[in-house]
Length: 365
Image 1 (tube, one colour):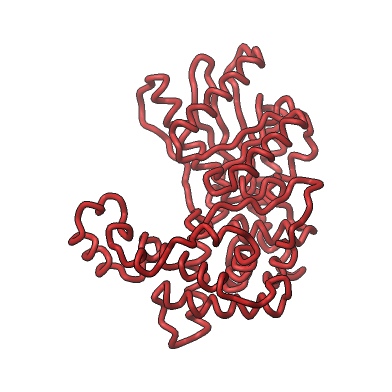
Image 2: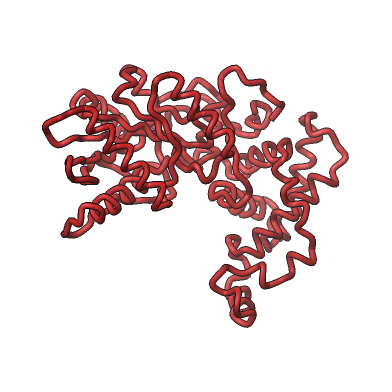
């Protein structure tokens, strides 16, 4: 993984820029509340279960009150996800994977929380504090728990909503949401926090790649190069071997499910937004392009110079796949990088777990 991360050219001056006075205040507020809450739910990114650790919790190693939840499980390698859950459980933490946007998954997680609160045998309203790094999905999880909990309890009244954004740092204050009755359980949604310095270059790079640290700190092209280096050394691209040009041109496969029965509407959709990279036919074209460039490349991807040559070829090929004008090469690379990272971060280009379990062998990624 370390070789792939070399594309992220950040330095000591970059370190700490993300640690604003607001984040420092949020860290202090969280620390003050930890002794007062009944349970702590630490939300980590399932793609980076170790690198997304919330460092301020290291001072509170009480595993009986500490639940480690691997969010965005739908974006991670499922077999690796289960290995990480087992790893945390073997260290006496309660742990599970969660998809904040899956209703059945949220119901199971809410049931787990209710069982844990009952075991506390508390005679008062229970408070659960949700903590984690920026952009790990805390607010999305809170909204889902609040909605499911209120419906299950048949409670009336206006639903509250935590602000959800793809950009890190959107949550600015600690807010309380009721998620269950009998017993009453309230969850505290907290701002995402990271330490002022992250000495582990590899971990910091993964936080940037997955969107926990704002993209503006690193050139978009460099972050996209990092992803391509990971993809080029993985087996993921082989899953796209069956995507031929003929397949890609079938509109019945190109359009979203709601348009499958209307080829005329599919054509209208394509004419309406030909550069929308989230359309199925564009994503299929990107996958096919990546498969063809990797499988046809005869160089050694373990050699840094040859890897860079492959990535350069891929940026050129992806300009066509994303329908990006090549009039200004540098601007085109930025556009390609943004679109590529968006597809990676939303799981459209495969499922990845970038952190290896302690003791595992590094396979040159």
